[in-house]
Length: 245
Image (cartoon, rainbow, N blue to C red; front, side, top):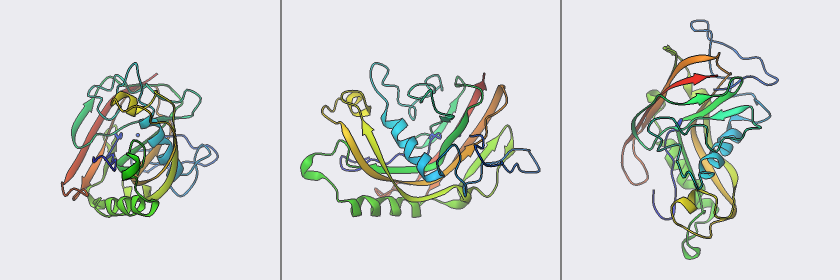
């Protein structure tokens, strides 16, 4: 990341799953489970809109915990900053490399949503004399999306590989996040005075899964971005050995 642009690669997954509101899920015949159809809205929002909600979730990282879900090495902090009223539980990836999170507990009857590879950018925390115009932020995200390698994407649920992951593409969608005074990720980074609404763009490949049955589950996901705007190749490889209860 630079001082003028933030890019969150991967998550949950980084930085994964959901039940089908008004839509019937279409499970794969091999495993009985699949991504909820990205062509349809689920729980009142499209994949692009949920991607914007995910960016809000990451930015809600705040004191006293300041436990960034993308940096979480064990998964023990996965329930922090979740909206208790939401039917959707967010998972996070990482900034590159291998993460194995074994201590995440997900409430029953919650859908899961996460990026296999994702990138976002806005002017939050950017000095006044370095603010980027909307068109430049959008162009940055378009370039980031183009560098994500479709054939590198992976998603496995309890050992069953999910195919056609390009279905979850979100090609540079707008969002608006709202940062509470002294209670956001910038406060944790010792940057004061970042508050209010910030418009930006998010791009990447995302997955939503219907609520999993109570008990232990393993979700693995990730992919490769051939280069970043700074020229560095990034591979995300995240595994959640989570418990639904």
